[in-house]
Length: 362
Image 1 (tube, rainbow, N blue to C red):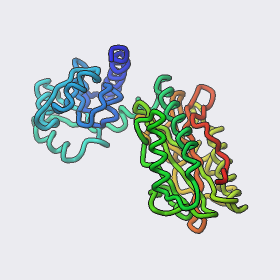
Image 2 (image 1 turned 90 degrees about the vertical axis):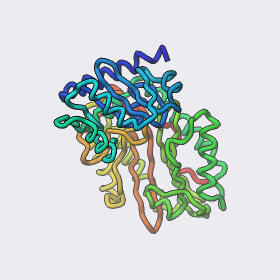
Image 3 (image 1 turned 45 degrees about the horizontal axis):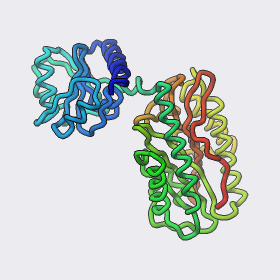
C-alpha cells in the first residue's frame, strides 16, 4: 500500500483539478471503478467524497478493515445509508455545491441527497470526469493489460483442443474461464461469447446447449481480468474446411481491422479509426453487415472511453488502450469478428493480443 499510495494521491489531485475547472468545491464519486482508480479500494459498497482538505471513503463495517488496508485516504465505516452520511458530511463542510456523477448516481440516490441538503444547495452533474482521466493509462497499467491479454491468448490456445463436433457452446465457455483462472487471472472480464454456426451472427450471443457441427463458423470473444485490468479478444475458427464465401468474408474483416490499426495513432480522432475499418468493408459490399462500432477503450472496465465509433470526437493519445474489432453478420451464414486489444503509442499502436488472426480450421 505504501509504495502505491502516491499514485492514488496523484490521481485524486488530478480529479480535484478537473473538478475545480468546473467550479466544483468537491466531488461525490459513486462509480466503483472510479473509486478503485482514485483510492485503490476494491470493495463493492462505497462512496468517495473528494474534497481538497481531506478525501473520505464511506463504506459499511464489512469493508472497514479492507478499506484501511487498500484505500489511499481516510476511511469511515457507516452503519446507515451512505448517501445520508454523505449529506451530513457536506453540511458540516458548509459547501454550497457538490459535483455528482450523472451516469452513475441513481435517481433515488439523487433524490435522497437533494432532500437532505439545505435549500439553495446545488448538485451539479458531471459527465466522464474521472473516466477521462482513466482513458490514458500509465506504463504500469498498460503492463497489467498486457499480462491480461497474454493470459487471454494462452487460455484460448489451451481451450482449442476441446473444439470438436458435439461439444456445446457453454462447455467451451466454461473450459475457457477455467483456463484463465489456472493461468493467474482473477476471472473473465465478461462472460465469454462462444457461438457456433448461425448463432455467430448475433454480435452478443450467449453460449448455450447448441452443439458444434461440421461446417459451423466458431466465434469466440473472451477476455481475462488481471489485477483489476481487462483485455478483450475475438477469434474465428471453422469446423472443417470453410467455403470460399466464408474465406472471403474473413479476409474482408481482417483487411478492415488491419486498416484501422494502421490508421490508429496519436492525434487521430476515434471516429476516423472507425471510418478506416468501415471504408474497407464498404468496398467489399459489407457495410450494412457491420452492426456496431469498431472498438472501445478498456482498463478497469471492459468498456471505457474512447468509443471507436462514428460519433466519438475524442482524439487518441499515447497510453490509451482500445479494442479494434470490425465484424460482419449474415443471418443465413453466421458472423465473423476479429478483435484485438491494442495500446496507443507515441508513433502508432501496439497489439497486446498476439494470437493468430488467421481462419483456423478445427
